[in-house]
Image (cartoon, rainbow, N blue to C red; front, side, top):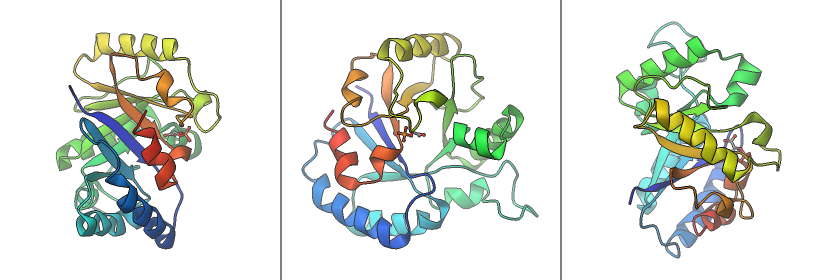
Length: 220
Ligand code: PGA
């Protein structure tokens, strides 16, 4: 059986002190969880990647790191951007094309494509977000997270039947990708999706901010 991915997308949350509290709790509780066939990934803000990397190494916990975003450009004069090679020093994965980036930062398809290309060249594993079954998935993407905008942070998750329908459509065009669902996943809603045979995991926002709540999701 393939691993189920549980990806914590912290978005623009947490200071270093708050990250410390999260990891203290995570360390003490993670031993109680059956982690077979489960993969935990944390996507903190860039400012906390170094801290998270040290915390994971110090406590030797089976957690991988992801960026939430990456520059569409290589190294160079692009003030304020973090390029893929820089990100790869800290993270194994990167989330690209999240709908909050499209909505608030006007990220269009060509920008997403450039980010995917940069991330690929740097050897990052890519989690590309799609909003519906018609979104293009770019070459080199291994993981696709279906996140309908109306479900994100709204408490109004998509119907499992519809998620399954979207997954089937995506798989017809991109048979090799792993498929995740994201959008108001929490301890009440997560079990509704676990019976979808093509599901490889979840992208989790709000419910990933507290260690106990996040780890609780791994028990289904
Ligand atoms: P949410 O966010 O779990 O808070 O709905 C999910 C996401 O945007 O990745």
